[in-house]
Image (cartoon, rainbow, N blue to C red; front, side, top):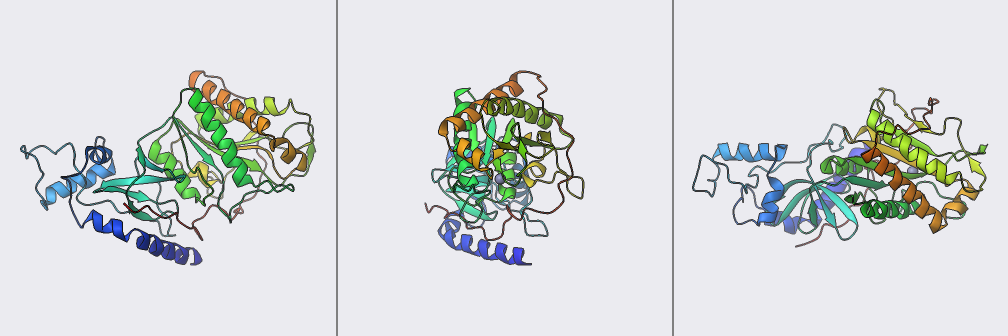
Length: 369
Ligand SMILES: [Zn+2]
Protein backbone atom coordinates (compact mmCIF):
# COMPACT_ATOMS: atom_id res chain seq x y z
CA UNK A 1 0.00 0.00 0.00
CA UNK A 2 2.81 2.35 0.88
CA UNK A 3 4.25 1.75 -2.52
CA UNK A 4 1.04 2.80 -4.27
CA UNK A 5 0.73 5.99 -2.26
CA UNK A 6 4.28 6.90 -3.18
CA UNK A 7 3.51 6.30 -6.78
CA UNK A 8 0.45 8.44 -6.83
CA UNK A 9 2.09 11.37 -5.10
CA UNK A 10 5.00 11.13 -7.50
CA UNK A 11 2.61 11.11 -10.43
CA UNK A 12 0.90 14.21 -9.09
CA UNK A 13 4.16 16.06 -8.78
CA UNK A 14 5.20 15.28 -12.32
CA UNK A 15 1.83 16.30 -13.66
CA UNK A 16 2.30 19.68 -12.03
CA UNK A 17 5.70 20.20 -13.51
CA UNK A 18 4.50 19.44 -17.02
CA UNK A 19 1.16 21.26 -17.03
CA UNK A 20 2.50 23.74 -19.53
CA UNK A 21 3.46 20.94 -21.82
CA UNK A 22 0.13 19.17 -21.55
CA UNK A 23 -1.54 22.32 -22.85
CA UNK A 24 0.73 22.06 -25.84
CA UNK A 25 -0.34 18.55 -26.59
CA UNK A 26 -4.05 19.25 -26.99
CA UNK A 27 -6.84 16.77 -26.50
CA UNK A 28 -6.87 14.75 -29.67
CA UNK A 29 -5.27 14.57 -33.05
CA UNK A 30 -2.59 16.95 -34.15
CA UNK A 31 -1.01 15.07 -36.94
CA UNK A 32 -0.42 18.00 -39.25
CA UNK A 33 1.87 20.95 -38.64
CA UNK A 34 4.35 18.76 -36.79
CA UNK A 35 7.98 18.67 -37.71
CA UNK A 36 9.30 15.81 -39.77
CA UNK A 37 11.61 14.73 -36.98
CA UNK A 38 8.79 14.12 -34.55
CA UNK A 39 6.63 12.45 -37.13
CA UNK A 40 9.39 10.05 -38.08
CA UNK A 41 9.74 9.06 -34.45
CA UNK A 42 6.17 7.93 -34.27
CA UNK A 43 5.97 6.01 -37.50
CA UNK A 44 7.94 3.70 -39.69
CA UNK A 45 7.53 0.36 -38.00
CA UNK A 46 4.88 -1.94 -36.65
CA UNK A 47 4.53 -1.04 -33.02
CA UNK A 48 1.68 -0.42 -30.64
CA UNK A 49 2.12 3.24 -31.44
CA UNK A 50 1.15 2.55 -35.00
CA UNK A 51 -1.85 0.59 -33.79
CA UNK A 52 -3.00 3.73 -32.03
CA UNK A 53 -2.64 5.70 -35.22
CA UNK A 54 -4.73 3.22 -37.20
CA UNK A 55 -7.47 3.24 -34.58
CA UNK A 56 -7.74 7.02 -34.74
CA UNK A 57 -7.86 6.96 -38.51
CA UNK A 58 -10.84 4.59 -38.48
CA UNK A 59 -12.72 6.57 -35.87
CA UNK A 60 -12.88 9.49 -38.28
CA UNK A 61 -12.23 12.08 -35.61
CA UNK A 62 -10.09 14.06 -37.95
CA UNK A 63 -9.43 13.70 -41.68
CA UNK A 64 -5.93 12.78 -42.65
CA UNK A 65 -4.12 15.71 -44.26
CA UNK A 66 -3.46 13.92 -47.48
CA UNK A 67 -4.88 14.02 -50.99
CA UNK A 68 -5.04 10.23 -51.18
CA UNK A 69 -7.50 9.24 -48.45
CA UNK A 70 -6.99 5.50 -48.92
CA UNK A 71 -3.37 5.79 -47.79
CA UNK A 72 -2.17 6.57 -44.30
CA UNK A 73 0.10 9.61 -44.39
CA UNK A 74 3.73 8.76 -43.67
CA UNK A 75 3.84 11.42 -41.00
CA UNK A 76 0.94 10.33 -38.82
CA UNK A 77 1.01 11.30 -35.17
CA UNK A 78 -1.33 9.05 -33.19
CA UNK A 79 -4.68 10.75 -32.61
CA UNK A 80 -5.39 8.46 -29.68
CA UNK A 81 -2.23 8.89 -27.69
CA UNK A 82 -0.89 5.83 -25.88
CA UNK A 83 -1.29 5.91 -22.13
CA UNK A 84 1.30 4.30 -19.91
CA UNK A 85 -0.09 1.01 -18.58
CA UNK A 86 0.52 -0.09 -14.99
CA UNK A 87 0.34 -3.49 -13.32
CA UNK A 88 -1.76 -4.04 -10.15
CA UNK A 89 1.19 -3.13 -7.92
CA UNK A 90 1.41 0.32 -9.52
CA UNK A 91 4.53 -0.44 -11.49
CA UNK A 92 4.55 0.41 -15.21
CA UNK A 93 4.52 -2.68 -17.43
CA UNK A 94 7.76 -3.24 -19.34
CA UNK A 95 7.79 -3.34 -23.13
CA UNK A 96 5.57 -0.33 -23.95
CA UNK A 97 8.09 2.03 -25.51
CA UNK A 98 10.22 2.48 -28.60
CA UNK A 99 13.35 4.62 -28.58
CA UNK A 100 14.44 7.03 -25.87
CA UNK A 101 15.00 10.71 -25.31
CA UNK A 102 18.48 11.51 -24.03
CA UNK A 103 18.59 14.72 -22.00
CA UNK A 104 21.73 16.82 -21.51
CA UNK A 105 21.10 16.81 -17.76
CA UNK A 106 22.13 13.15 -17.64
CA UNK A 107 18.86 11.28 -17.73
CA UNK A 108 17.09 9.15 -20.30
CA UNK A 109 13.38 8.51 -20.90
CA UNK A 110 11.77 5.75 -22.95
CA UNK A 111 9.29 7.14 -25.49
CA UNK A 112 5.63 6.12 -25.77
CA UNK A 113 4.81 8.34 -28.74
CA UNK A 114 5.45 11.62 -30.45
CA UNK A 115 3.11 14.44 -29.51
CA UNK A 116 2.96 17.92 -30.88
CA UNK A 117 5.95 19.85 -29.61
CA UNK A 118 7.70 16.87 -28.14
CA UNK A 119 7.26 13.31 -26.92
CA UNK A 120 5.12 11.39 -24.48
CA UNK A 121 7.63 9.73 -22.19
CA UNK A 122 8.11 7.27 -19.35
CA UNK A 123 9.96 9.39 -16.79
CA UNK A 124 12.89 8.05 -14.73
CA UNK A 125 10.50 7.48 -11.81
CA UNK A 126 8.10 5.52 -14.02
CA UNK A 127 5.21 7.89 -14.67
CA UNK A 128 3.85 9.33 -17.88
CA UNK A 129 4.68 12.90 -18.92
CA UNK A 130 4.87 14.98 -22.07
CA UNK A 131 8.20 16.63 -22.64
CA UNK A 132 9.85 18.86 -25.16
CA UNK A 133 13.57 18.78 -25.75
CA UNK A 134 15.95 15.87 -25.50
CA UNK A 135 17.54 13.96 -28.35
CA UNK A 136 15.55 11.06 -29.76
CA UNK A 137 17.58 7.86 -30.14
CA UNK A 138 15.83 4.92 -31.79
CA UNK A 139 18.37 2.15 -31.20
CA UNK A 140 21.99 1.53 -30.17
CA UNK A 141 24.46 -1.36 -30.07
CA UNK A 142 24.98 -1.34 -26.31
CA UNK A 143 23.11 0.04 -23.30
CA UNK A 144 25.19 0.44 -20.13
CA UNK A 145 23.50 0.70 -16.76
CA UNK A 146 25.44 2.24 -13.86
CA UNK A 147 23.80 0.58 -10.85
CA UNK A 148 22.11 2.54 -8.02
CA UNK A 149 22.30 6.37 -7.80
CA UNK A 150 20.82 9.32 -5.96
CA UNK A 151 21.10 10.23 -2.30
CA UNK A 152 19.24 7.25 -0.88
CA UNK A 153 20.43 4.44 -3.10
CA UNK A 154 24.20 4.50 -2.71
CA UNK A 155 24.77 0.77 -3.15
CA UNK A 156 27.78 -0.59 -1.24
CA UNK A 157 29.98 1.98 0.49
CA UNK A 158 33.66 1.26 1.16
CA UNK A 159 35.28 2.00 4.53
CA UNK A 160 37.24 4.70 2.70
CA UNK A 161 33.95 6.33 1.72
CA UNK A 162 33.77 5.34 -1.95
CA UNK A 163 30.09 5.01 -2.92
CA UNK A 164 29.21 2.19 -5.28
CA UNK A 165 26.76 4.42 -7.19
CA UNK A 166 29.57 6.86 -8.03
CA UNK A 167 32.07 4.15 -8.85
CA UNK A 168 29.51 2.42 -11.09
CA UNK A 169 28.95 5.66 -13.01
CA UNK A 170 32.67 6.36 -13.36
CA UNK A 171 33.41 2.88 -14.68
CA UNK A 172 30.28 2.87 -16.88
CA UNK A 173 31.45 6.09 -18.57
CA UNK A 174 34.86 4.51 -19.19
CA UNK A 175 33.25 1.38 -20.63
CA UNK A 176 31.11 3.60 -22.87
CA UNK A 177 34.21 5.44 -24.11
CA UNK A 178 35.98 2.18 -24.85
CA UNK A 179 33.02 0.74 -26.75
CA UNK A 180 32.62 3.95 -28.78
CA UNK A 181 36.32 3.71 -29.65
CA UNK A 182 35.55 0.21 -30.89
CA UNK A 183 32.92 1.72 -33.23
CA UNK A 184 29.82 0.83 -31.22
CA UNK A 185 26.92 3.15 -30.35
CA UNK A 186 26.14 3.41 -26.65
CA UNK A 187 23.54 4.92 -24.33
CA UNK A 188 23.86 5.03 -20.52
CA UNK A 189 20.69 4.55 -18.48
CA UNK A 190 21.86 7.41 -16.28
CA UNK A 191 24.72 9.86 -16.77
CA UNK A 192 24.22 11.74 -13.50
CA UNK A 193 23.63 10.94 -9.84
CA UNK A 194 19.88 10.27 -9.99
CA UNK A 195 17.60 7.65 -8.51
CA UNK A 196 16.52 5.24 -11.24
CA UNK A 197 14.17 2.34 -10.45
CA UNK A 198 15.00 -1.04 -11.98
CA UNK A 199 11.78 -1.09 -14.01
CA UNK A 200 12.91 2.06 -15.86
CA UNK A 201 16.44 0.78 -16.41
CA UNK A 202 14.99 -2.33 -18.02
CA UNK A 203 12.55 -0.28 -20.11
CA UNK A 204 15.39 1.84 -21.49
CA UNK A 205 17.01 -1.38 -22.69
CA UNK A 206 13.76 -2.67 -24.21
CA UNK A 207 13.06 0.68 -25.87
CA UNK A 208 16.48 0.68 -27.55
CA UNK A 209 16.68 -3.07 -28.39
CA UNK A 210 20.50 -3.15 -28.14
CA UNK A 211 22.70 -6.12 -28.99
CA UNK A 212 23.57 -6.26 -25.31
CA UNK A 213 22.81 -4.59 -21.98
CA UNK A 214 25.37 -4.37 -19.18
CA UNK A 215 24.41 -3.49 -15.61
CA UNK A 216 27.56 -2.34 -13.81
CA UNK A 217 28.05 -2.95 -10.07
CA UNK A 218 30.65 -3.48 -7.37
CA UNK A 219 29.95 -5.99 -4.65
CA UNK A 220 29.41 -5.84 -0.93
CA UNK A 221 29.13 -8.50 1.72
CA UNK A 222 31.70 -11.27 1.54
CA UNK A 223 34.47 -11.27 4.12
CA UNK A 224 36.02 -14.61 3.25
CA UNK A 225 39.60 -14.15 2.06
CA UNK A 226 40.49 -15.64 -1.28
CA UNK A 227 43.66 -16.09 -3.33
CA UNK A 228 41.77 -15.00 -6.45
CA UNK A 229 39.29 -12.19 -7.24
CA UNK A 230 35.66 -12.74 -6.20
CA UNK A 231 34.35 -11.40 -9.53
CA UNK A 232 30.72 -12.39 -10.25
CA UNK A 233 28.71 -12.28 -13.47
CA UNK A 234 24.98 -12.98 -13.32
CA UNK A 235 23.35 -14.08 -16.56
CA UNK A 236 19.72 -14.56 -17.62
CA UNK A 237 18.67 -18.10 -16.76
CA UNK A 238 18.02 -20.18 -19.86
CA UNK A 239 19.56 -17.59 -22.19
CA UNK A 240 22.69 -19.05 -23.81
CA UNK A 241 23.81 -15.73 -25.29
CA UNK A 242 23.54 -13.97 -21.93
CA UNK A 243 25.53 -16.85 -20.40
CA UNK A 244 28.21 -16.65 -23.10
CA UNK A 245 28.54 -12.87 -22.75
CA UNK A 246 28.86 -13.26 -18.96
CA UNK A 247 31.54 -15.92 -19.48
CA UNK A 248 33.54 -13.67 -21.79
CA UNK A 249 33.37 -10.63 -19.51
CA UNK A 250 34.34 -12.83 -16.57
CA UNK A 251 37.29 -14.28 -18.49
CA UNK A 252 38.70 -10.86 -19.41
CA UNK A 253 38.00 -9.14 -16.09
CA UNK A 254 39.20 -12.01 -13.92
CA UNK A 255 42.44 -12.31 -15.93
CA UNK A 256 43.15 -8.59 -15.57
CA UNK A 257 42.31 -8.40 -11.86
CA UNK A 258 44.43 -11.49 -11.19
CA UNK A 259 47.52 -9.50 -12.23
CA UNK A 260 47.12 -7.21 -9.17
CA UNK A 261 48.67 -8.22 -5.86
CA UNK A 262 45.76 -7.62 -3.49
CA UNK A 263 44.00 -9.41 -0.62
CA UNK A 264 40.77 -10.54 -2.29
CA UNK A 265 37.50 -11.75 -0.81
CA UNK A 266 35.07 -14.11 -2.54
CA UNK A 267 32.09 -16.39 -2.09
CA UNK A 268 32.48 -20.10 -2.81
CA UNK A 269 30.55 -19.85 -6.09
CA UNK A 270 32.18 -16.65 -7.36
CA UNK A 271 32.16 -16.85 -11.13
CA UNK A 272 29.51 -16.92 -13.84
CA UNK A 273 26.19 -17.84 -12.26
CA UNK A 274 22.43 -17.34 -12.30
CA UNK A 275 20.10 -16.66 -9.38
CA UNK A 276 16.40 -17.51 -9.35
CA UNK A 277 13.39 -16.29 -7.37
CA UNK A 278 10.55 -18.43 -5.99
CA UNK A 279 8.88 -18.47 -9.40
CA UNK A 280 12.06 -19.81 -11.03
CA UNK A 281 12.57 -16.55 -12.85
CA UNK A 282 15.71 -14.45 -12.63
CA UNK A 283 15.98 -13.01 -9.13
CA UNK A 284 17.40 -9.68 -10.26
CA UNK A 285 14.90 -7.37 -11.92
CA UNK A 286 17.47 -5.99 -14.28
CA UNK A 287 17.87 -9.51 -15.77
CA UNK A 288 14.19 -10.50 -15.52
CA UNK A 289 12.54 -7.34 -16.85
CA UNK A 290 14.73 -6.88 -19.91
CA UNK A 291 12.90 -9.65 -21.78
CA UNK A 292 14.78 -10.81 -24.86
CA UNK A 293 17.54 -8.21 -24.56
CA UNK A 294 20.80 -10.05 -23.84
CA UNK A 295 21.74 -8.81 -20.37
CA UNK A 296 24.57 -9.38 -17.88
CA UNK A 297 24.84 -8.05 -14.32
CA UNK A 298 28.52 -7.39 -13.56
CA UNK A 299 30.00 -7.39 -10.05
CA UNK A 300 33.62 -6.57 -10.82
CA UNK A 301 35.02 -6.88 -7.29
CA UNK A 302 34.20 -6.30 -3.61
CA UNK A 303 34.00 -2.61 -2.73
CA UNK A 304 33.25 -3.68 0.86
CA UNK A 305 36.76 -5.13 1.14
CA UNK A 306 39.20 -2.31 2.11
CA UNK A 307 42.09 -3.58 0.02
CA UNK A 308 39.85 -3.91 -3.06
CA UNK A 309 38.40 -0.45 -2.42
CA UNK A 310 41.94 0.97 -2.40
CA UNK A 311 42.76 -0.88 -5.61
CA UNK A 312 39.69 0.29 -7.54
CA UNK A 313 40.04 3.88 -6.31
CA UNK A 314 42.96 4.06 -8.75
CA UNK A 315 41.64 5.46 -12.05
CA UNK A 316 44.19 3.34 -13.93
CA UNK A 317 42.53 0.22 -12.54
CA UNK A 318 39.07 1.51 -13.48
CA UNK A 319 40.40 2.08 -16.98
CA UNK A 320 41.72 -1.48 -17.13
CA UNK A 321 38.30 -2.83 -16.09
CA UNK A 322 36.77 -0.87 -18.96
CA UNK A 323 39.33 -2.19 -21.44
CA UNK A 324 38.71 -5.77 -20.28
CA UNK A 325 34.96 -5.24 -20.70
CA UNK A 326 35.45 -3.84 -24.21
CA UNK A 327 37.58 -6.85 -25.21
CA UNK A 328 34.86 -9.19 -23.98
CA UNK A 329 32.09 -7.31 -25.80
CA UNK A 330 34.04 -7.30 -29.07
CA UNK A 331 34.72 -11.04 -28.71
CA UNK A 332 31.04 -11.62 -28.01
CA UNK A 333 30.02 -9.77 -31.18
CA UNK A 334 32.75 -11.08 -33.48
CA UNK A 335 33.50 -14.66 -32.34
CA UNK A 336 31.78 -17.77 -31.01
CA UNK A 337 34.11 -17.97 -28.01
CA UNK A 338 32.28 -19.64 -25.11
CA UNK A 339 33.83 -17.74 -22.18
CA UNK A 340 34.74 -19.36 -18.87
CA UNK A 341 34.23 -19.25 -15.13
CA UNK A 342 30.85 -21.02 -15.07
CA UNK A 343 29.87 -22.26 -11.61
CA UNK A 344 26.98 -24.14 -10.03
CA UNK A 345 25.31 -21.39 -7.99
CA UNK A 346 24.70 -21.89 -4.27
CA UNK A 347 21.34 -20.86 -2.86
CA UNK A 348 21.47 -17.18 -1.89
CA UNK A 349 17.94 -16.80 -0.58
CA UNK A 350 14.80 -15.13 -1.91
CA UNK A 351 14.97 -11.98 0.20
CA UNK A 352 14.83 -8.67 -1.63
CA UNK A 353 17.69 -6.21 -1.34
CA UNK A 354 14.98 -3.57 -0.81
CA UNK A 355 16.48 -1.23 -3.39
CA UNK A 356 15.59 -0.43 -6.96
CA UNK A 357 11.85 0.04 -6.42
CA UNK A 358 9.67 3.03 -7.27
CA UNK A 359 9.01 4.24 -3.71
CA UNK A 360 10.43 7.65 -2.82
CA UNK A 361 11.66 8.28 -6.35
CA UNK A 362 12.14 11.99 -7.16
CA UNK A 363 11.74 12.73 -10.85
CA UNK A 364 14.13 15.17 -12.42
CA UNK A 365 12.13 18.17 -13.59
CA UNK A 366 10.75 17.84 -17.07
CA UNK A 367 12.02 20.71 -19.17
CA UNK A 368 9.64 23.48 -20.15
CA UNK A 369 9.58 24.31 -23.85
ZN1 LIG B 1 25.17 -2.81 -6.73
